[in-house]
Image 1 (cartoon, rainbow, N blue to C red):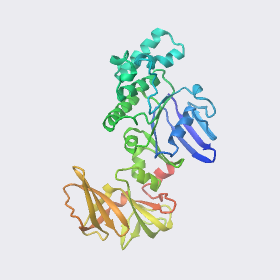
Image 2: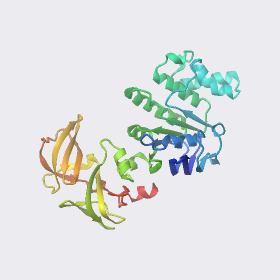
Image 3: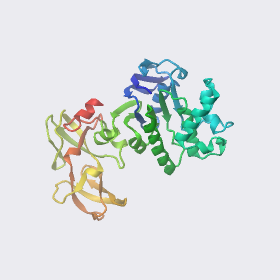
Image 4: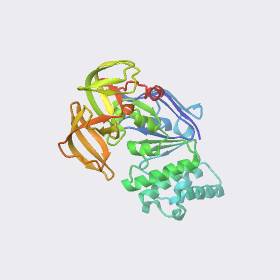
Length: 365
């Protein structure tokens, strides 16, 4: 397995720029997620790693070797697609063994390796079955087996579970992560599903419009988003945004929101003009004594919790509260925010202001 290092890669298709000067490092043995909406550049980035697309500029290193202009055949990686791309005229054994046959490996060694991989994937009982009659989950296991069998330096996966139904997709994502942990393989995985990324990834790159918005561990990205886009894309429901005209002076520990003052982590960079106050729904609490007021518009019950939507002077806000807490439609109540969890954003650029709480995360990202 190997480290993969991306340095300022850019990809242009005529007048369209698909990826803009992206840089990040996938450490040896990591399960690394490329996350973002459709058209954000994540698949193009993966294809450049694989050698299926060559970067317009920038460098790609695999195991310390610069491979940016080398074809896929010279990079020693394995690619797993969303569409399984199996050979329909071969059985399971034939599909898994094909890469080894292409390398001219002796027959006895091929048989042993195929059986070893089939045991890891739990498909020894279907080795002699044609792939056409297999379920989606079994076909995906066969596709993974074909990638695993030749022990490449890295696995690159382009939404490999996207064709499965929701319930089986969740099951397969757990299996895939467990398989990664057993093998210790360097894996780069493309997805548009933020829950999948948070569940499976050691590190996440969040992309939007060809730009890396944030890079880091899942918890840091959730707790301290670098931009409004990341805050909105990660989380269900996403972070609340309350727009206001205000001043955030360097060193300040509170801001004025409407007619009330709210504590925030000590601000490390000042900003004036239109700001955005960001807070996750689970960090909103009801407090009749709080001066900031909201009117309940709707309630969504989720078993042990409920999502309550409030109308406030600065916009609509959602709170995740215990289901035991009674909220009547139209009820006006005080809303309190945990100051340790608040993020301020520049409303124009969307960038998070550095604070005492998030400074290390934003600096490292």
